[in-house]
Image (tube, rainbow, N blue to C red; front, side, top):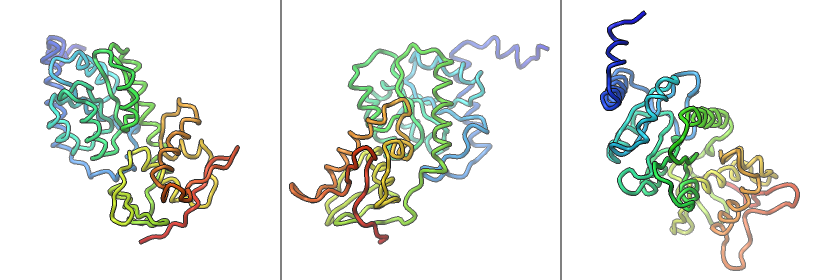
Length: 281
């Protein structure tokens, strides 16, 4: 049966409908406050209507994807500025779709976003970008990367796949129970992801931190490549050999010197072992 509300929706233009979605999202955010989610422990995002924060520049063709996502049962909140992106981040979205052109430097925004939150992120570009951007984006912690045009059904499927994967990892990936841990000459603050040695700080990417955390919660235990892929949440469609490059980068950062002993041992045919003793501090 046709109602006045449905008639009004049918007469809305794309721009009006988009503004309406953003306004509705803002009203709902203020009307239904949520408690902050613990880092690394998302709520069961697939048993409720997923809230998608869509951060795209004004007039971007990417914004045409918002309405199909709404029709597929997702709640879409939009922003057109970097400031709005970080302001909306405080509302704890289920997932962020980030326009690589937003603010003129989407990769820098991604770096800042990943430093502030572990919310799942899909990078998108309305214009085909160099393959290096895709690689850098994934290295900086994006969960997926898509070039427009993209089938809205594929985008929806990728969103739900990412949320399912995060939910599975929710019960398995935990931060070390103590805030600070020591191993060898190193100290790690598990809350801020700050790794230091004698006061000197070593910068870890999000992937390197997750890998190190997987090792320190299971020292002196053999961890297969699949164990590490599961623990770090790296993309499931990558070969398990892709973990080797990540281990190599982390191993180089943990070396005690040019001839120093390595904290991570390679066990051929089995995987890796974290040899250092881990102590709470």
